[in-house]
Image (tube, rainbow, N blue to C red; front, top):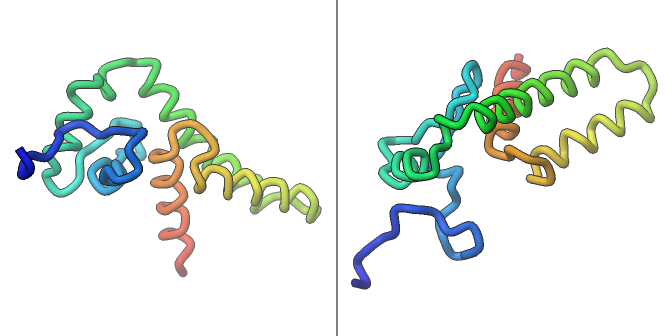
Amino acid sequence: MAAEHPLLFNPVDENDEDPEDHLGVDLASGLLTYKKGSRRGEVSISIFGLNIRDQLVNDRKAALNDVKAQVAKLVAVEDSATAQAVMRDLANMREGAMSHTLARRAQLEEVRRRLAL
């Protein structure tokens, strides 16, 4: 029994693996993916219906679009107070203070990758 590993994530167990090591998100569709053939990721997506519930996928897409909108706002804003507020919002997204953290972090990483000129 000690050699068995759970296939589902336990969100309240601090010693469980980080789901972000197993799950990714397709930035175009908002669908979750599983990384590196992760069985835990694949089973979690399937069991919890993470890609078949339209509202969940739409909310994930909205979170992705929110990141893009905040980044665009940061680029366009001219006053420092608004820029600081947007930076706080982006930090909250990265830190998991908003819904759909995995999707938001993936979109932020894509922005960071694109800006590495």
